[in-house]
Image (tube, rainbow, N blue to C red; front, top):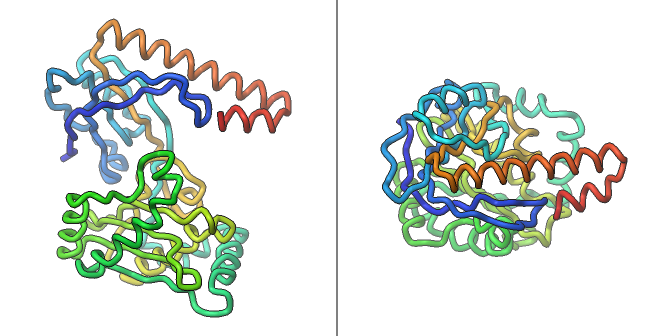
Length: 306
């Protein structure tokens, strides 16, 4: 059964690249589909909205189920917030077959980066799963997370709340958490934390110190984490969760075309907001196409970055 999160403020942003020109706050109940639900094309049940809520945010809805979801909402105002592929890795393929399925450039690049990080020795990758291990992992990973762009720009670093820590330790006690740290010359530079739901490993929190960007420590750590998970031979899939990313496309064995669909109360304010946002997004997309067609790549990059 899909878990519905209580309504909370969500900004509907008028953005050009990374620059937000305007944001309209809506109180939305989040309805996230699991990887299994997305792969099977299940429609989530929408519970009654809280009085103060403006609507629902349905995430990872299979693109081909969009019309059915709108119909099932009973007259709610639809707005597609983003489109992406929800990538996953199937562990049944085996490590050798999976690694061999990567492009030769990707394989050689990962090997070269790992060799450079190891600097003639062994990679220093440390694994954590038991509660006491995860308790030691957290402050070190937080140290890395505080320097990442995910935390500084997106506010989505590794949580530091006691609630999160207690949940992590409880998952560890149930053997439902895996975590890794990568060290370079004795210094922690990258982390990965993954809870486990059923037989699916969830790509939850990841980051690396930007001072080591040229060594690609995140990609090297991801490869070593995959090596460990394949070796355990107890999980079915690795869920790269919502959103795109080069590393997700590179490592995945499959994916589901998804949308994040907003279903809003059909009020005048919501109609005006979604109409304006839709027109704005269309104009930005058109500007990018015109710039690219004119061969102005540098200007296109500035448009993307804002």
